[in-house]
Image (tube, rainbow, N blue to C red; front, side, top):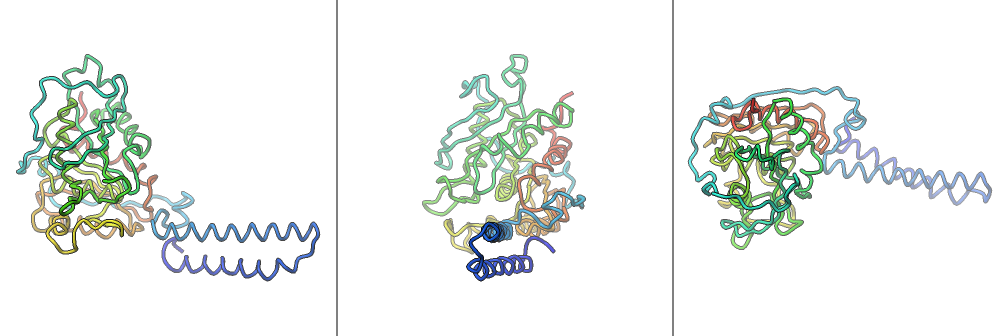
Length: 378
C-alpha cells in the first residue's frame, strides 16, 4: 500500500479513532494501582502516537514526501527511466535566439565584493527593469579572488528555491555547492558561480516567479533580467548563454523551467528537479485572472508545442510525485526542435529535498558535458 492517497489515509483514521474510543471506554475502568497506572500511561502514549501518525500521513498526503514504505525506509532499489525529447542539446545551444541577453557591457573595473575573502557573498540589488529590491546570495568558486585567476571568467548557475524557502538553502543544503566543488576537482564540470536570488515579494508570498498585473511584483523580470545583469556587472562571469543555467526544485523547478524557456537569450540550459510546467498559485496570491494574457504566457506546454525555444533542459520527476510527474512527462512528449530535453524518471521517489540532493551530481555531470561554458578546463 502506498503512503499517499485515500486508502492508507482511511486506514490510519480508523486506527486513530479506534484508539481514542478504546481509551475513552477503558481508561475510566482501570483501578488505582501500579498496574492500572502503567496501563493508563501506555494507553495515553498509544493514543498520542496514533494521533501524531495521522498528522504525519495527512501532511505526507498533501506534500508527497514519501511514496511508499520502501521510500520511507530507504529500502527500495532505485528504478529509473531515462528519456530524451526534441532536438539534441548541441543543436539547441548552437541556435541564436532573439533577445537582449546580458544587457550590460563588461565593466572596466569590478566593484569590491561585499565580504572580501569569503566564498559566500550577499548582495542587495535594485532592479531597474522590475523595480524590485531584494537579496541575492552568491557562492564563489574556491580561488575566485586568487590573483592568478584575475582574468578568468566563470559560468553561472542561477538557483531558485521552493516554497516556502529562502536563498540560504542553496548555501546550506541541496548538495549543490559541494557537488560543484567535487565534480570540478574531477574535471567533470567547470568551477561555477551559484547565484540564489530572493523570489518572494514580499517575503512569504508564493509568487511562482511570474510578472503580476498592475501593481503586482514583476518577479520574472527581476530573475531573468535584473539579477543576471547586476551579477554580470559585479562578478567575472561568462557572458554567452552557454555559460548560464537556471536550476530549481519543486516550485523553484517551475521557475527554472520558466526562466530558461522564456529567456533562452540569457539561459542556454535549465535543470528542473520535481518541477512543473505552469504556475501553481496558493490562495493568498493571484497575480492575474485565469485565462488572461498573463496566464497564457506561463503555459510552458503550449510554448513547447507552438514555439519551442532553443534551450537544453534536464528534468527529474517520479511516477509517485503527483505534483511533478504529469506535466513533466507531457513536456517531454511535447518537445520538438530546437528544444532539447533529457530526463530522469524515477518509479517511487517522493517530492522532497533528499531525492533532489541525490540527483544533483548527475544533473551537473549532464551540464558539464552539454553546455560549452560549463565544460571543465584542462
